[in-house]
Every structure is written in C-alpha cells, then in structure tokens.
Length: 155
Image (cartoon, rainbow, N blue to C red):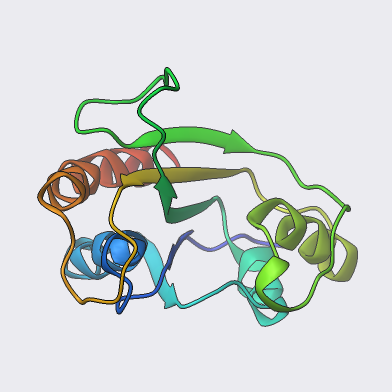
C-alpha cells in the first residue's frame, strides 16, 4: 500500500486548561500543513486506525502532567518527543485507548503500521477553563517548529 502523507493527531480537552495543549499545537499546524494531515480529537478512538494505516508516519500530540521532582529529557520549551511502538495490551475502546494500543489495532486491521512518535507537552493546570497556563502556552509555541521539522523529515 502506498502511504500518502504524515499524520498528526492532536489530543486533548480544550475545556480543561492545559489538557488542551495537543489541540492547540494541532490547530496551529493546520496553517502550515502542506505535507501532513492534521486531526484533532478529544480522545483516541478505534476509528483512527484507518487513517493511521494510510500514513507515512504518525505523530500523536498530547499534554502530560508534569511532576517537578522527576528529571526529564525535554527539548527547549519543555516538549518531549519520543518514538512509539505498538502494544497489544489494553482495551481498544473508550478513554483507555493509548497511542501504542491504537497502533496495534491499526496493524491488526490493516497490516503493518507506520513509524510513530508522541510529542508530550508539559502541563500543570487541569481545572475547568479554556486557557493554557503561560508555561504550557510557551511549550505549544515552541512545539510547532519542532513538529514542522519532524514532518519535513518524514515527508
């Protein structure tokens, strides 16, 4: 199967403060998405297995609760890009569907899945609200050129 373009999936809840970071980055990318398909979703669903199967490479973007006591290997601005592997463990339905499980579901339904990564944006505010914290907003701005560079490498 010919894989068409890279796929970026922004995940989050725009009404839970920093949980909307993945959506924020994905929406910012839509204006620059010449060589990538950008999807925005509140949570991962089994229906995403099909577009994943058609992609050249996949990037999941999501917020991550940050524990200040844990050392992390983060890029400038706090975002953390890491490769993903498929994992058959876990329930393929509902809120428990992880990017790794979704990759495994795509492979089971459509054949080998493309290489995949996740970009985690650090967050610290999770209460009801439609604004990102200043730190998370800065990390989102810094993440956009990182994702564009990722997309250019996998075009």
